[in-house]
Each structure stands twice: as structure tokens, then as C-alpha cells.
Length: 58
Image (tube, rainbow, N blue to C red; front, side, top):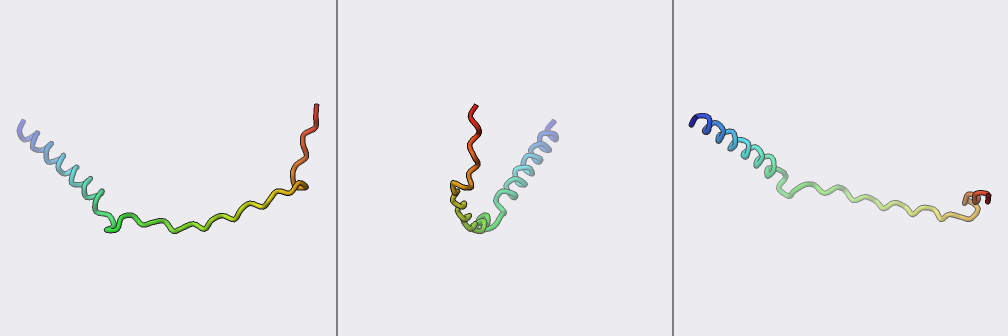
């Protein structure tokens, strides 16, 4: 019984060590920042000629 508990404790310690290693062993300055995106140009102004005609009245 004691051997099973010892093995379970060892497995738990190993799991915690793996999680700790993967969480805190990254880059020293943290994650890299994504490059700044250029702003999209404004959409062209809609002219009245380009607007679709209104639907016919019923």
C-alpha cells in the first residue's frame, strides 16, 4: 500500500514539474509582440449615382 502511495506521489510531483517547466521556461522578456498593422484606408464615399434604386412600391 505504501509503495502505491509513493508511486502516486512521484507521479504527481513529476506532473507538477512538467507543468511548471512548460509554463515558466519561455522567453525572458515574455511573448513577442505582433508587428503593428497598417491602418486600413477609409472606404470610398458612396455617391448617389452608385446607390441601388429603391424597390418598387406595391
